[in-house]
Amino acid sequence: MTAISPSRYSAAAIALHWIIALLLLFQVGLGGGLEHLPKGFAQFAGYQFHKSVGILILLLSLLRLGVRLAKPRPAPVPDGKPQMLLASAVHALLYAIMIGGPITGWVIVSTAKVKLQTMLFGVVPWPDLPVGQALHEPAEVLHGLLGPMTLALVLLHVAGALYHHFKREDVIGRMLPAVIGNRTGMGIAAAVAIAAGFLALSEGRGLVFSAPAAATSAQASSAEVIDEPQPAASASEVVVEPSQAASEAAVVAKATPWKLDKGGRLGFTAEYSGEAIKGSFGRWDAKIVFDPEDLGGSSIRANIDLASVESGDSQRDDMLRSDSFFGVGSNPSAQYVSTSIRETGEGRYVANGTLTLHGQRKPVVLRFSLKIDGDTATVNGSATLQRLSFGVGEAEWSATDQLKDAVGVDFSFRATRQGG
Image 1 (cartoon, rainbow, N blue to C red):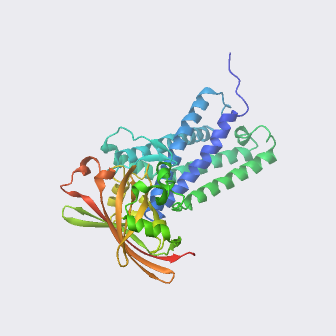
Image 2: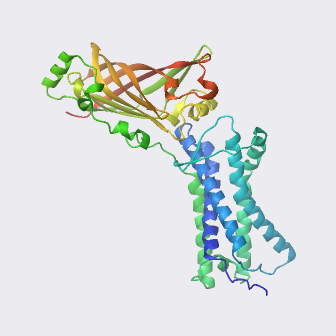
């Protein structure tokens, strides 16, 4: 018996067709705009999102291919031999791009010298392919051709559909729900689809990536740090003299919030082969409650966006973001929470606290000087930490003969009092 061809594609095939089409155009626009994103967090987040969308397209395309093989589909519309060969070639090449495009990107990531963990939409870790370095350059060349090839094939595909539509052949209707059954409805649907395609392309091109606010960007792994009790409730962590504790208990709480002004700096210095490597973080913030006469009620809570690291060398910055160092794919931020603050001299202070970095939580001491002029404070400070205790610098970077274990941290900023 000969199977009867249906008049339209299955509901699953229709849904997947339009979803993948819009995702492809969005991905082309996104890929074209990546190089124009600001370096640091925006570019890192853009590439991570580009990889996530690519894997999503791959999975949906494999599902679409499975539906195509499992479900009966309409028979080809009779036409001239050249037109039918062109239509078949366009369909085959579109499948090659839908599946091969994400795979070439996957190969590029898997063979990159600097390993960055791919986190699908910032949540699901995605493994690298077990392929050799020799495939890196060919994959880059093929991947670089995807944008223009995809646009050309989509234009040919749309032109073919419109060609049959104007010949009054029901081709567009095959890929539309059955409720759209007349030519007017099909024409409107086609116009809407074309407009949606242009919108997806432009939205991908103009997508902006902004780092989350410091107060909300901490990951679940650091929630216990942000929500830990205030120093007054954690006496075992507070290092103060008995006379100081008594005097602080006797005074009325005076510590007030301060807001950081723009233009502050948070930097670091590491020693590599006898040379000082300096860098800084472009995005960080702190919640500060402070008064010199109420140190018991004073506190510091800082959040650092690790992807915003800049050291004057883009390749080195990528290495610092990789799993071997900061591992920003799974630990995008670091948090410092003070447990006590004490005065060591006029305008000089020491803050004891904990730093959560790379999934590790360790004590870190901050030393800073402070000058308050009315409602404006000027702060300069420093700290020293051991990178290996946080797991920063793994594998070949765990040796300290070239890259020293000790890392210096420096910070300076101005802040404005927010009220009593």
